[in-house]
Length: 59
Length: 492
Figure 1 (tube, rainbow over the protein chains, first blue to last red):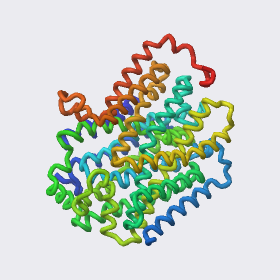
Figure 2 (figure 1 turned 120 degrees about the vertical axis):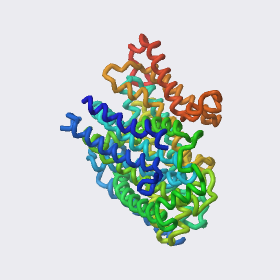
Figure 3 (figure 1 turned 90 degrees about the vertical axis):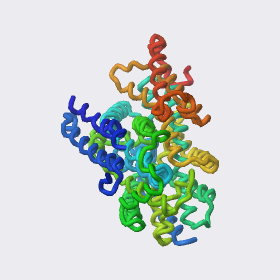
Figure 4 (figure 1 turned 90 degrees about the horizontal axis):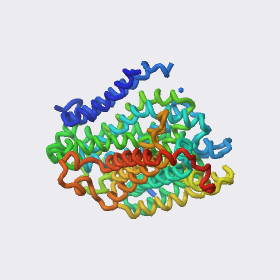
């Protein structure tokens, strides 16, 4: 379960923690907008990994 | 009546028809009307929850903030995404406890956890006060859609009245089952229309996304970055944290949680839900396109940008389709909000003072309250000049004050007692209300603080004080708390 707790914090650090440093155009978007859109997708993937690893999902 | 209004009217009639059809054959007792008999599977719960994302706020307010504020509008995308991370842990716990104790409202949760009917009444009243600005947003959206689609034939105030009457009829007839089926149509239409507008408009006017952003950056340098002060990075971070804590505190969201068949539903839904928010990028693209194509919309008028740009670009029949989709984005969340406020007042406030009344009587009272609440919302809609985003942020600052006492109540040995919970919530609310009414910010109250601290969202400060007061009072009243409060306020 420890890895799931750590994974929970990753999106918060990735989006909010790095924001001062990410404030080139990527996929037509300004870099700060792309960074956030990328983390939306990554958050979804992280939640998928958490679901797979969580023994409660075999309540 | 033009073709656009006729199409919008057809959408309204369709949603009322769906409401009647879905509630047919069901005995609409309190549990059926509010939590759908607790039998919704993953897809329906997903649609009810996702319906909370695509409201008139995201449709008109999201593009309005991109138009008026630039990069800070991205907070909408991020707070919803991070809320799903919190939901993975929070919602199954709430659902399990609610099912074990047969709870029906958020207020019941506080009563049961803290053995305090008075805390239940306080939570219900906080919910009611917080939801009024959000109902105002839905009415404002309905007003904008109808008045703009009429090409000036119907004034904003007439349109708000028409919207309020439509919303009231819809709620009285349908209950939560109607909301679910309309949510299905609404979400399909919203994804199609937002996707189309967000891709077509930048390409039509600028030849692509990057040329559009470059043109905006040239016309308004720095608009696409977070500014150094005001809506800065520290404002963004504090606002997102506040909204993540508040996302599941809304009473109507609690009701949607209770309607699930199992707790696993939430962990499964959390995986796919963040991707659903990506559609909001297209809403922002429309707002950014409108900056150079329909300039001059200031203050609350920025919320008109999506429809003004669409009217300049498309024929009336297509404006009718956009307006119809917009109408549904106001009807579904608006009906959930109205239903929640009415049920909270009837069941969690009135019934505490009259515990012998039957559930049937409570349903009748809740339905009677719906038009009264709608009238109050109409008053604030016609007499307020705030943007949709400002109204939503105000509602969040209020409702999030319930978060500390709810979170700690989920601990096995809750260190907080009812005295601490009540004192913390009241202190947090008082700070938010005082600062909102005096139109202060952290910066105006404490001008010597560093800029990053001055830009913090005031709601997060209220939340911190709430937490400190809650802990302090709980420790001070530890001995008193062992005597349980009576089951009804009449016994006090």
